[in-house]
Image (cartoon, rainbow, N blue to C red):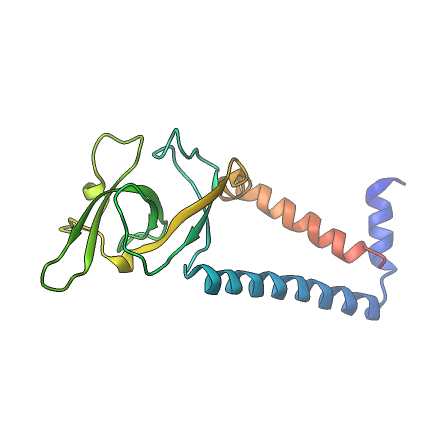
Length: 180
């Protein structure tokens, strides 16, 4: 009959109690992932403790597909640090290096200018219209570590949504047909 026939027979033989048990197990997995994410947010002080490098603008240091771990402390930001920041009007964060730090004399607040290591000029063209510096509220965190190439899974699923749907379907089928 084959693998597909066996899977269909397995789905038909599922009892309501087993289906509820599997649904609760799946809910616990999702809830656990959310709790871990929120705990990481509290520990790191960053709204997004893990990000994926999406472009080659930071090569050779970070390549497309690398995962960065972020931390946001109260320490002042220094030139040379790698930060992840959001720009007003853009939803995807940017990973670049701080090249200049400007402290305002009147308030003591620090503004920063960034640049991708693989880019020719600074990021002022990327900033919102009329914006010359990033303020602290734009910065999501500082890069404190990375895992090379692991983020490619995210990139592939974003660029090719059919793969994401196939993976989710396969995992759902696995949960439904498991006998535990």
